[in-house]
Length: 170
Image (cartoon, rainbow, N blue to C red):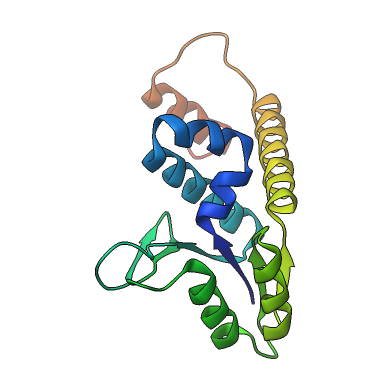
């Protein structure tokens, strides 16, 4: 199994659309990042964990699932980098490849030391854009391949014709 650990605020600061959004609505930028990571997870089958830095916030670590993506806010006096390093150490094993998405150079070297692989913010951004293009292309092909009725029919009539077509109706 592959796991991708994402440095949330690092991505928000590096991706153009999230940078723009964070200036007007920071929470919306976080939500959009999580939504994009859910699409990534669904498309690639890679488990995604997004870590947000709550270093200055008082309290305990918070974990929850959003769109089936694990979201973690670090505990008081713990940076996202520290949490990511711990996760990389805990999750890396023979059968699990751990990737960490960050453009923090110092963090990248720490990750290498933990046996994890790195993805820069730009690499992940480009990969997400490619995935979105692929999904859009697949949707166009699916739409294009479906016959369109020129006469609007009710569901009951469509069901009758389908049964008739299959030889089930009389």
